[in-house]
Length: 273
Image (cartoon, rainbow, N blue to C red):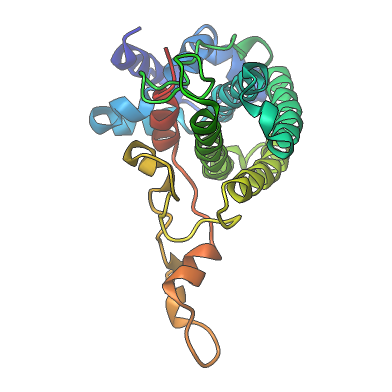
């Protein structure tokens, strides 16, 4: 599929005119909905030359839900395959956590598919080796201890991405309180997943600066872009606090930054076949 062609389709006059109802909006998207679902992932990769067009797409609530559906498909399949791999057999606590998270992610998929109705799409094929960089399920002979660490590292990256991506879509859903409510409900659960996975890895349950934590390769740094921001509402929060100002570390830990569709899509694209 030509991403540039798809973006061009999205910027036709018909699609840039605000729809009068949600039903009309879905109707206007028509067949583009399913194409966009798959193409949403590479938006980030194409954004350098088409940011204006991609931004137009993000004004529609269902494009936000389609991005969310891609991420939920990614997570749901990851946890399913992790549990089937046998790698977690020697790690009962982690296995129990993965089982619970897997249920949540599949529930999120079902909910989003219901919300998107005919604009929902089937799960794409995922490559959790990211082009051979990982072997989280031990299929290529990686011993279980290393595969286990990769399972945890990938889960952390997926959950941290999910939390920030949902937050990034909140403004696109503000005109639809029902969808916004659902998105924020999922967001809070994703945050709990992220915290639990991070603690399994021996890390804090929250992010400090833009530190990706031990064991995550540099390619995962995109997950933590802008997390070192200390400006909130135009105020440098490191200057606040009684007596001694807040440190950079505590200031960044106190705020979580949204992730744009472009950035979230670029991260997910690493795992698409």
